[in-house]
Amino acid sequence: MALNASKSVAIFFGRSQRLKSLSGLKSVNVAGTVIPVSDKVKILGAALDSSLTMEPHTKTILLLSHPLT
Image (cartoon, rainbow, N blue to C red; front, side):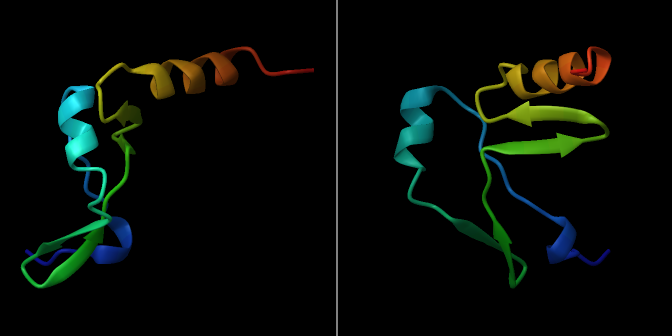
């Protein structure tokens, strides 16, 4: 299976202290393909952040269910 770099993003999950130690990493190399690192990803409609707080997902759902008029 081929990795599509234009549709891929890497994320590290963990506690804040561990994530701070990885904050200098801007990309990872997977089988010769450079993948950018992000602190948020969207997988199958669920927005996840690196601390797994579900805050980005909750905010998105609230905005979609109560649009500003």
